[in-house]
Image (cartoon, rainbow, N blue to C red; front, side, top):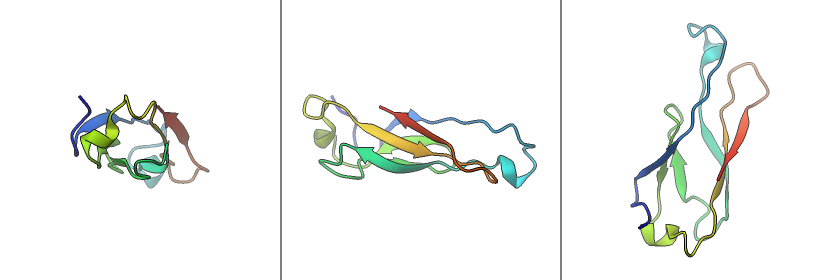
Length: 89
């Protein structure tokens, strides 16, 4: 059975070696692209601080027998660097 809307399905984690008392160690998460973009280009939401990824569309639309795979690209750039990027799927 697919996850219900609002269900946490994954948690992204990242670590920064900068001094935690500085702004350079602050990490924020952001989904920059989701594939496939159907049935919705925004099937998941990521909490920018915790990295929790939750469903935001109907469970029927997330049926893995209908959708072969879901991939999301996430960005979590620490301050003062170009960017960090990873893909989960």
